[in-house]
Length: 82
Image (cartoon, rainbow, N blue to C red; front, side, top):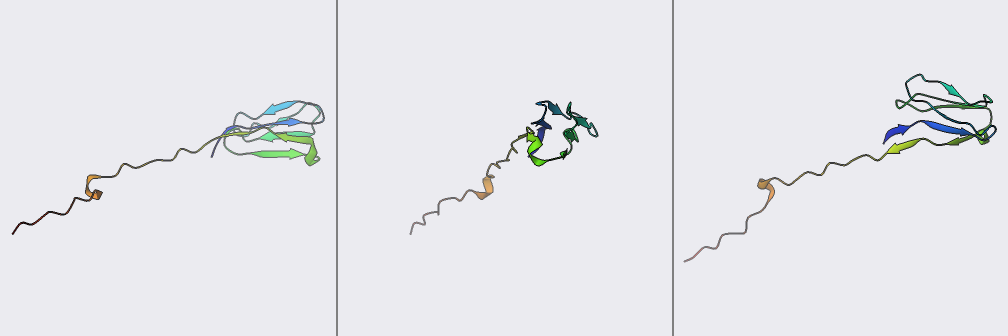
């Protein structure tokens, strides 16, 4: 899946932070959590796991549907007459 938002919320200070560019290290107001990576990668830091609420979002992958080519369509058998 493709990352469309790299964000998190701090449960201590309530600050919502978002990293928008590669190496865009962002900390919350109380410095208990950080996010990094923009839309290239997710990196998180926190003192306690309960300090962070994950808010990142992903776009679903699109699947490609191939149309059958004419050579795959079978023809009805020919009828031979005597």
